[in-house]
Amino acid sequence: MKYTILFLSGLFIFLITGCKEKKSIEKKNLAVEENLNSDTFYQYNIWWAFVNKVFDGDLTVEKMKEYGDTGLGSFNMLDGEMVMIDGVAYQVREDGVITEGKDSDKIIYANAAFFEEESSINLTEVKDLESLKTELLQKLSSPNFFYVFKIHGTFKTMKCGGLAKQERPFDDGLDVLIPNRPVFEGENVTGTVVGFYCPDFIGNINAKGFHFHFISDDKKLGGHVMDFSFDDVLKVGIDKKTNYHFQLPDNNDFKNVGFDKEFQYKKDSIQ
Ligand SMILES: [Zn+2]
Image (cartoon, rainbow, N blue to C red; front, side, top):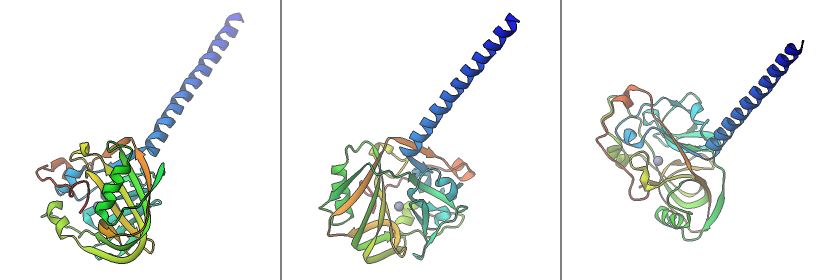
């Protein structure tokens, strides 16, 4: 009888301890997950591969949304630029028409994050894209972190670049396609600029410096920000990121890509 009681108590203690340990491991995992989700800059496809004609990816819009509600990038086969705000991935097609990307649509290159505004600054000297980059760089706490930006404003002019859908075999890389991209322009246009910043040490993994995409409130103008003019106070929401997660396309194109060409947008950002 004594032994039975002893055995049962032992078993009870073992079960309680086991459960506690399991719970604490689960808690730890949850904390790691939460931290990764809220403080992570997610990137799909290494920039250098994208430049070298890896244009066919395996990331769905649905999957991308697991990594963020804010983003920029390109749809598969360069079938349009991608701008994600508030969890909706907009597709700016070759002719400039903007539609909502379907969950099953695929993405070939993306930066995404859950945007949580940590600070907001008012920029008073912004006249165009170049001055935005200059002023913003001065105001960042350090150029050595990753950042996500959300900017809403009315721009006197806005010039956005698009992409022309490609077919196999791919003849040209981004070094040729970008200078010949479709261009969309608007005047007195109100909308949101989504921006991502990578320090120079990112090398060829991503686009260095600032990268901005735009979408107007009426969803009539969007794409990669090439330039704009502005003459008011520009309010910029900033979210610093200290985790970085990149994911590679798991396919033959990536398996066989030769990293021969280099391409970065002009200094600190985008042309
Ligand atoms: Zn872009």
